[in-house]
Amino acid sequence: MTDHHIHLENRPYTLEALGEFCAAGAARGLEELWLLEHCYLFAEFLPMYEGLRAANPFIDGWLHKKGGTRSLKGYLSLAEQARNAALSLRLKFGLEICYFEGQEGFVRAQTGPLALDFLLGSVHFVGDFAFDHSAELWQGRDVDEIHRGFFKTSLALAGSGLFSGLAHPDSIKIFGHRPSFDPRPHYQALARALSRGGLYAEQNSGVFRRAGGELGLSPALLAALRAENVLVFLASDAHVPKDVGACFEALAGL
Image (cartoon, rainbow, N blue to C red; front, side, top):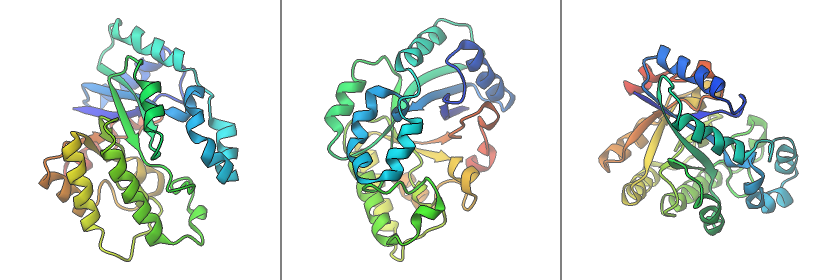
């Protein structure tokens, strides 16, 4: 069994730190870990966020604290070291890329030269709205409009040809907001786009651990993915070793 989504950002880029994640995974019966980082942690990707920063002071302040705080060179060096080390679990290394329509060329240019095993696309912004940062940011928002924007961006991501998979495909539900319209046609369109593009989707426990609510994908979205034969991979979205493989037994039973 594999955990397909683990972040290293709270640990140094060392083999010792990797050993902590491997030990936690082994304790939960895992055989392989897919490690990644958010692209905004690396200065090389910050130009992609300039429009957001200009439009939204909240995002600008957040990126002043978080953006460019890690070394891409150090991360790639760790991946190379791990490939030549005798670690207890199999490892793959990738990046989680925030998807913005119109930035495909930039992403391709930045990631093309990198020796990575996978690229995971994610939707964390609808326009300049950081929908998954805090519940308070939803105040005064048009829930239906935000959901339509989320589905539109997810479809564009799936058709971009950039990514191996789509992270947390219904993370828009993180703070309990649901659209007044039936989302099933959007689920079906997304499932078809993922199938055409050969992308996997995540069954991710991170949203549940952060905010409670429904564990994993909504049943209607999961059914749509299965109907289109989209691979659905288990993912913890762990940021610390103790969360590796979190809720996998429950997720596997959905």
